[in-house]
Length: 72
Image 1 (cartoon, rainbow, N blue to C red):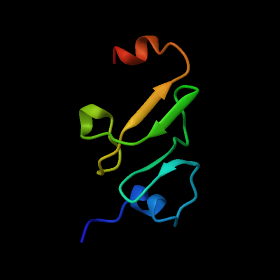
Image 2: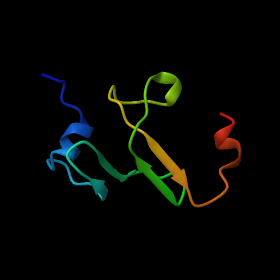
Image 3: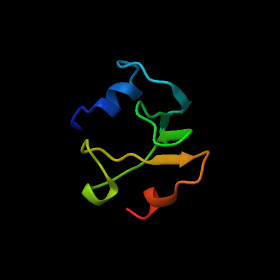
Image 4: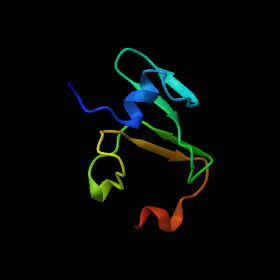
């Protein structure tokens, strides 16, 4: 059995989130602390990916020039 994380609980509907897409394999939702006008989570992995919770997820950022944030 996989370890339960905040992300698995959001996907299961146990924790409230603004879901932007969900099917049987994928759940995408808006970040609670957005870094850009559009900031959703899908996949992000490992410490160099900025991962804070050990779980595969992605961040989608857009809506404005991101400038130095991309250089970090």
